[in-house]
Image (tube, rainbow, N blue to C red; front, top):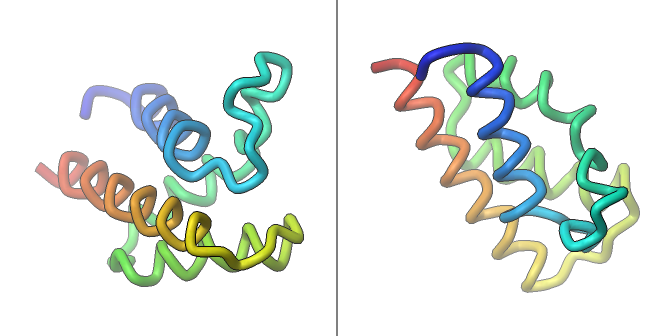
Length: 94
């Protein structure tokens, strides 16, 4: 991965396109809704975090911080986002 900006852009993309627990990705004015989470995710990617931990963090953030109900769709989107974030971690390490 080339730069910190590129990593942040990719994390942002995963959060808005794959995770999006409150369904704002199609609202142009809300495209920055999850930007406050990007630095925390990047910090986690710099540790020995595992995919399951990322999944749990995304689920907790959605359900406890945002008040989103725990649904099959949320579980699936959180799982997908965690997998893609782990791919970024692996790319970053290589």
